[in-house]
Image (cartoon, rainbow, N blue to C red; front, side, top):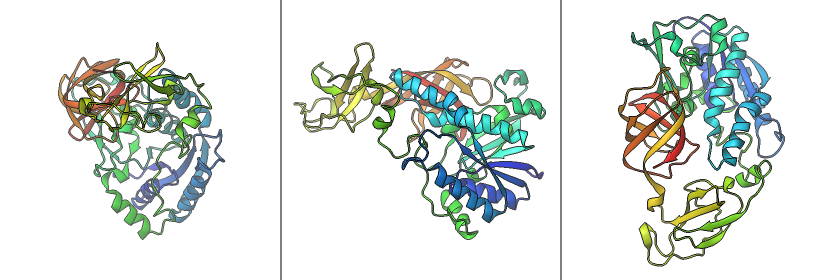
Length: 394
């Protein structure tokens, strides 16, 4: 981006967004910071750090020499993200609210707000990249159904170009998985400066220019949960429905507190550590740990198995629905790589049945604890193609 623009930066109070603002100002852009407040139910508690984060963001803006505005998106967040989060848990699935927050808040509500402030671009501290390429002849502008109203008011994006979402150069910090629902209109307005850097370089720059949060620890979760016990938090919104915990043979081992409070692959908090499974079955062993393997919603039964490599925890295929494709159209069937959870290496797979409403993936190697509600995200090398919400593991 050679032209000098008015860029609105989402300042979170963390080091990545702080360095983002610094880099853009150093390039000569007119930079304005916005702090997004997305949760206020108990933001004065020990678990939610939004007040501290705003103080840090304001201190960063002061050092860099930019204005900062505090904007409350809590109502949008509750309607668009948290309500869906609760619906998914009540249905027995495990959602990823960060994916929805990016699509609905940071790159929709925030983007629209920035455009109203006269911004040409927005920027965040995500570890990802955007690349502009010539649009293929088959790519028709009207195919991009979910464009932001902001771009319509500000002039439609140039149909000669297509925008690709790429992994961040620091693969250990890459966040393209959480951004896979972004569309062409959103990417055409977005900058990810730290996506070109390694985290160590970001920390070095922050220290060099004297940012007060240069050594601040990375955020480890969404504000409304923070570091609190997850089950305790969820219980405020979802009632307990206790039921049996059974093994693969149907023997009752213990009681669960409600299927919503457990996720596939979960090992902690099952309350059955002392039960032995004789015979070292299926990769387990007499003292092998227990893992959540299945949920029977109709019978309110939680099934657990022993051993990380138990067959019930392995899947060779998955179905996903609610697909979102970065290019605005499904990719062709064929060989790609995919992540069925964030902290996972790309797994070779074959894509079939890709459409706007879903797709099917088959893997060359078993995938562990493929979990309905999580995102399956598709890659072609460093290019993030999009993804969908896992509906079934097979």
